Figure 1 (cartoon, rainbow, N blue to C red):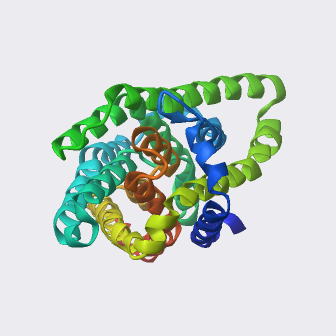
Figure 2 (cartoon, rainbow, N blue to C red):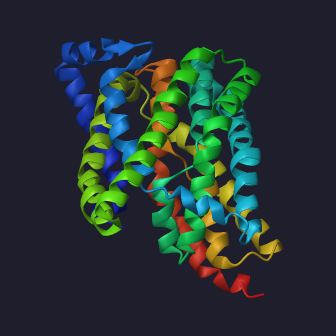
Length: 340
């Protein structure tokens, strides 16, 4: 992991402080930023999110999907947990903690918003960071690529229906047209742009140039876009955090529980199915992590910059690295479980 990725949690805390201070110092500026939107899509945030999502889509080699027939058990397990277990387990843990255990601290309105944010977070499976986690556990990089590519393709058709279903079951009303626009804007268009760019640039300049020059150019851009997005979000969340600083801890609890639940479920199912460790560990990590850039963008479109739903997705960013590193450690220490 590079320096930024390793200390992502610290950067998020720094963005909380900077965002709160700037929001207090320049309320008019951030107020005008919040008004720059079209069809519920905040334009400054949309540009920043695009700068994060597009480079991730560039990394996906969809020709790898043609290798689905090789070792299908690991891929099927990944898809089963990601789409049949993960969103629903998060909905359950969110309902349990926000609607019941924590209801006296947060109230019914915030309970609904936190629940919505965590559901959207869990319905978006991780993309780029999975390659880091796979590398740290000696995962099979080619197979990890297949797992991620197929997940990205399924997001096109499964993300919106699952989110709408779970929010509807939770009595949280969301405008379907806004959700569809978000999917088009933050999944379909970046996916197509990444695919077309990758195909044209590799064909014209070769893979070495594409990875060493074009992709490397976006790395600092992506980092700056993430930090700027977090600062803008926390500039609007300042009052809530200052008055209820412990709310971040309350949101983090069900997110962390469901991350460990899904990762360990996947890991142990892989052991039962006798899937090799270099496929089992990335499967467990994919089942645990989230595409938080997409989740943040969608919650802002649906609920706004100042919403509890948006705050909940950002807490997902906050806990991502330390929790995932702990899961990597467990996977590395239990390789002997997979000697069949």
